[in-house]
Image (cartoon, rainbow, N blue to C red; front, side, top):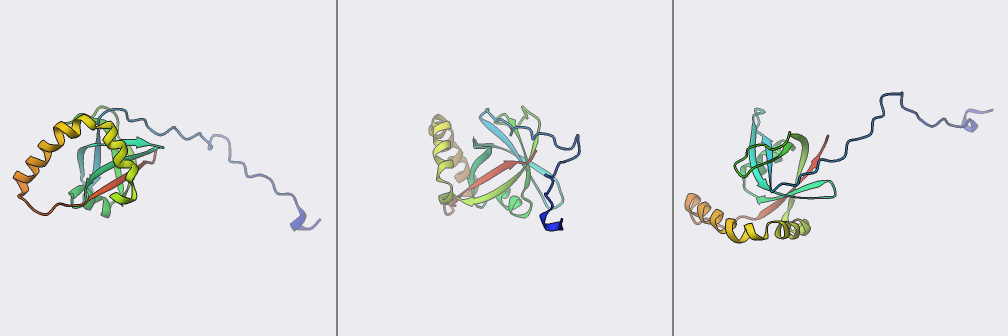
Length: 152
């Protein structure tokens, strides 16, 4: 029998090595602590609004925010449920973040509007007012969508 006609054995991993992947974490609260990393490795945690769909987490933020700059350099992040003040409510999960222009992820905006409809009426105007007071009336920045995929 020639080598080309020899039936191939299905590849089998040694016992104990093939473990089922755990299901993606389920984040159900209102806020998520997104930890991004500076060049020196120091973590910076920020509480953010988020929505989750199909194992991915979507966050909408300003394109010129510091978290976006840090993600551009180091896309590895950690995420955990938290309070509005940033107090953790679950253990951190490692993840990777990808930055997309807002127009490439319109579904994220729809999901955010549905989840945070009341907060957008009450909290968002106050947030924008504080931002204007702190930074002055500079040009309006574009929004981007952070697509976060847990890696555990």
